[in-house]
Length: 304
Image (cartoon, rainbow, N blue to C red):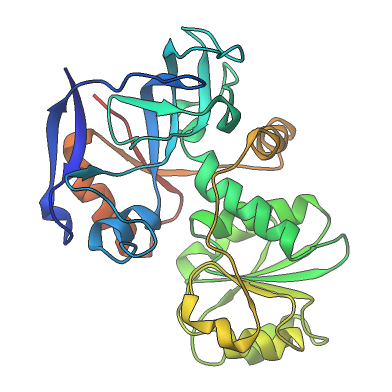
């Protein structure tokens, strides 16, 4: 038997519990991971709350978690990419807030020996989303990108990816995160009332593109600053589709994107701060911390 975090009904985090389950058996083309680290993403507590039940219907009880890093501990028929004992990172097919999870080899890459487990377990969701949205926005060298909630999970990745491409990045954040954004290569501005004026003071000619990762109502200001909706993209304001902006709901990073992120880490162009780690029995506290929306760095579950 093994341990996994599960919930039996949608609702707050106090409905989470650690239960004993049979370790999943890998089918053809699958591997099983002994999970060493699994990052918490806002998607996880949105699923728990029931906000995603129409898009992702679940048979309850169910688990949480998609990011994963661990050691391959069993391989299914036809798998040639990895062998038992390989250290890997990516995303899982089954919930990763657990001691064991199944994964598709196409969504995994080898973990560099020197990469900490917490960082390895944090790349796929936030990092993959950031890479894909920067590509969708066609951010190029010499352009100016505005990122809302730039110190958050996806925002901090996007800032560094865009800077590595030679873009100028202006990032909104609370003042306590301004120094962190400067370390990432961004120019920080405080969010809230007067945002348009502060961004225009920093970029009098406006910005070329805007990434909204906060969903706190900045879409009208973003469209104004970008001179139209075409190069404004949100991963949070799903009710803004009628404005003509791009809506991105995210997909797990594939091997190409994961390798690109690892290359940036190796070059020193991408840093992944870990806010705090939690055990499986502390999953409720981990999701509560994520829901505050004021965390700098990734929150990571380390299965016992």
